[in-house]
Length: 210
Image (cartoon, rainbow, N blue to C red; front, side):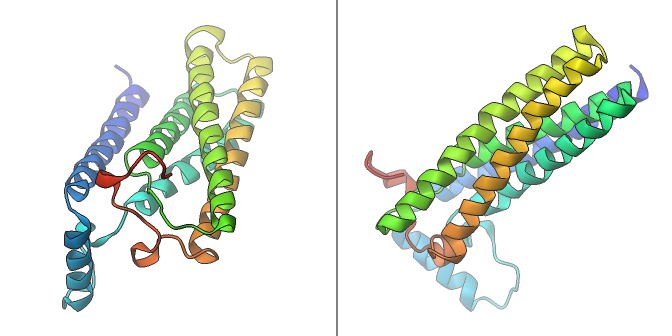
């Protein structure tokens, strides 16, 4: 096994380890009912510790969602550089970035996806746009990762194919940017999320909520 493969495996294991921790924390949080959540939040505010525990957060989505944003934006920049360099080592780095970005997007949209209630009509419209672009991000990043694997194993550094990969990655970067924009709008303009406002208990979420 050469050095680049070894370091790629180490990075993947480290990233998956952090995701495993996130899953465990989210499952533990889902076991709390609304009363316990309120108590834990109040305790965090009254505690002498500046750093709040994970259980004090209404939802872990904001802690996870920044990973795919950064990784997918970095991947498309590296893929643009790759169009001119056609470097084999760069291909492995790009695959790690876009693959990790896909995993992060999946976790953010599935395991730590916040559920809402009592939204205004405007907030519902913004949320629909946010979820639409989040879905586009998920599928386009998955396709980009598959194409990069094909590039590594079969096509092997053909500029025409790398341009096609770049187009897919650019769409993924655009989608995650738009999802981030609408997500920020939900938090800072519509007030969804801070101190658990408009967030429902996911364990008791009915079929009518988001």
